[in-house]
Structures are given as C-alpha cells and as structure tokens.
Length: 321
Ligand code: SAM
Image (cartoon, rainbow, N blue to C red; front, side):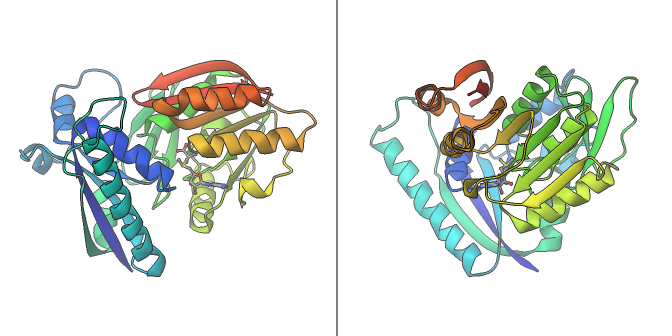
C-alpha cells in the first residue's frame, strides 16, 4: 500500500500550535521529530523510559522540528493533504498579522508531501515508539520491544498501527491519570474515541469490570480490538464502531473521552440530552487556550467542574452533570 507522508516544518514552541491545529481537522495521529528532545534524552535521569535510542538521530544538527502526518494515497488522502496545506497557510498568516494573544515563532510552517510505501512508514515510526510510563505504575510497551516488568507494575502491550494512542501524547497521559484518580474498580467504563484502545486497556488493568470502547473509524476499531486481545482482555473490553454524535445507549459509571475542545462540548450536550443517571466524565484533548471557553460552555449546560489537570499545552477535566 502507498501512503502520503506530509512533513510540516515548525519550531519547538510552534509544535503545540501545529498539532493542536491538526486536532481541529480531526487529525490526531502525528509523529514529531524534535532535535532538541535528543538533548533531553541524552541527559535523561528519571521519568519515561527509553530503552533504545537510534544513534543516527543524535547526529542530526538541523534545528527545525518536523511534524509528520500520514494519509492513504487515495482521493480522501489527497483532499486531506490540501486541507493541511491551507490550514498551515492560514496559521502562518494569522501569526504574521499578530492575531494570537500569545507570542511564539511558529517557524516556516512549510508543508511537504511525498509518496512512501507503508512498510517504510512502519519501520520508521517504530524507531520512535518505546516503552513509556504513562502513570506511576502503568507502562505501555510496543509489541516489538522487550521490557522487564518491575514489582507492582502493570504493563500493557500496544501495536497502534495508524491509530492514535501510544502513551507518548499528553492528552492520553492526562486521561489515564484522571482515570486512576477516580475509583474505577469493579465499575463500567465507556471510552469514547478509543483509538489504539490504550485507555480501555488501562481501565481494565486498573480493575474496571467492563469497558466499552467506541470509535468512529472502522480501521481504528480493528486495531483496538486486536490490542484488547493481545492483552487477554477481550472478555472485559468490548469495542464497536460508533459516532458518538448519533447517540449511544451504553450505561457506564464513568465516561472518558480524549477528543478535542469542540467535540468534548458536543459530547457533554449529548450526555445531558440522554438524561437519566449521568455519570462523571473525563474530558481530554482540550488545548489550553480553549480551557475557559470549554469550562464556560459546560457550566452553562449545568455541569460542575470537579477537577482540572494540565500538562504542557493541554488540559483535561473531570466534570459531572
Ligand atoms: N483514546 C485514545 C487516547 O487517549 O490516546 C485515542 C484518542 S484520539 C485523540 C481521538 C479518537 O477519537 C480518534 O481515534 C478518532 O477516530 C475518534 N473520534 C473522533 N470523532 C469521533 C466521533 N464523533 N465518535 C467516535 N469517535 C471519534
């Protein structure tokens, strides 16, 4: 199969603006090559684990950050590439006109596209996905790497293919952190926008008795099911293809949704409209600039904001109708 590899050239401070803006286009799966991160990795002491490092990357000395996005090489993929190009042009002109209330250099925002073979994509990105500790006692390990489990640790295996959810993104870690803060033992959890299934698997490992994961994307559903099976959790986790906007009649004690600012507001409206016993909801994927807007919208709908957690440019909330 052929893929279109899109490279967006930005700066380190611009990376968040670029990925957040891709989120607005419902493009969640991005890969970031940041030469500055290599410094961090080289000097690493605590925190996420990097068992393996590609030494070729250490030799790179260009200072631009590259954000990669991949699409299938078909009509829809080519349409998405044009959408990304237009979006980046608009972001650049907004920066030049001083439209943002924050001052960051977003860099060139040049967008390059090229056709690659899917095998090249897989081999390339696999180099950048390593075991990562997403909360204190929970490690996410790619299927192709070894990891020696330590006492008291929970380890999940993930092969995300092209789905979002490796544990390396702040929005996933924030969702998992909030899931571990609420008591989900023996509870039913609904994971909306399950991606690779990472949060569903995390919830099951933390003791949930039943987990429903839904996603709008058929391919992603196949990947999430595969990951649930890989972790021997198919008896607890049920994954299905659904668009939450069409409603969902799944009774849960807690809902988790890592989507994006506008979608989490839509979701909360649907939860309210569905009525009955409305469970607490963990909402993630909210870019910091939209935190107030989201909170105001939810408060106006009658939600209470029980908890706010932030990492980098991202905010996650626990809310209750
Ligand atoms: N839960 C994973 C995580 O936390 O890493 C993946 C989150 S990813 C940011 C968002 C996911 O939501 C994508 O897999 C996307 O396909 C899905 N999604 C987007 N819109 C949706 C909708 N209307 N209904 C269901 N899923 C949706």
